[in-house]
Image 1 (cartoon, rainbow, N blue to C red):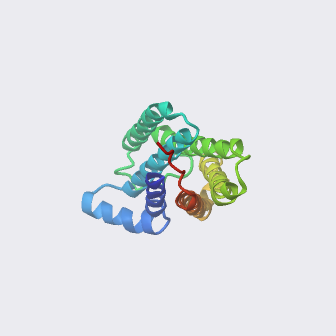
Image 2: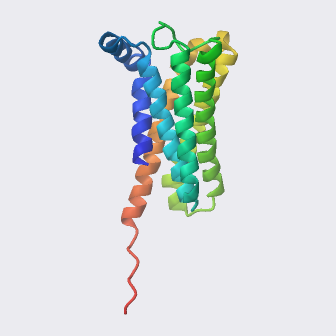
Image 3: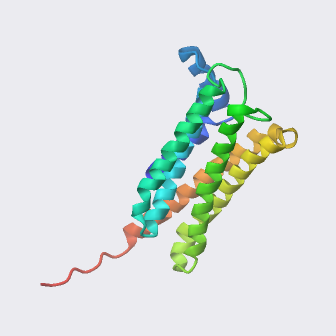
Length: 210
C-alpha cells in the first residue's frame, strides 16, 4: 500500500493545475527542453499506484498468482502511454491534453482514463464482496476504501467524458478531476492507516506449547 500511496501523491503533485502543469512543467522544459513532462510522469506514477492497488486487492483475496499478470499489464499500459506521448509530439508541442486531440494524443488520453476506471472498479468490487466483515474493519478500512474507489471511478469516467464532449467538460477538468484525485488519495491513505492500526492493536495469537 505504501507504493500505491506514494504513486498517488506524486500523481496529485505532478498533475496539479498550478504546481505541476505550470511550475514543474516550465522548470523541466527549461532544464531538459521537454514539454509536458510533468503530465506524462504524473500519469505514469498514477499507473504505478493503480497497479499496486490491484496487486494489493489480489493478495487480500488470496490470489498472489495474479500478481505477475497485473504487473505485466501495468508495464504494458505504461509503455503504450509513453509511446503515445512521444508519437503525439507531447514532448515538443505546447499543448494541453484536453479536448478533441485525435490520433496518438487521444489514444493516450483514453488508455489512461480506462486504466483509472478498471483499477478503481476492481477495488470497489472488492469492498462490496467484503461487506460482511466486522464493524471495525468496515468503518476504518472498507468504508474509506470504497469511498476512495468511487471517487477514482468518477475521475476515470470524467477524464474519458471530457474527450467525448470536450466543449462541455474540458474547461472544468482542472476544477473537477484534480480535487477528486486528491480526495481519492486521502481516502486511500485513511484506509491504509486504519488497516495498520487494526494490525498493530490486534492481540498476538498465543503460541502452542510443545
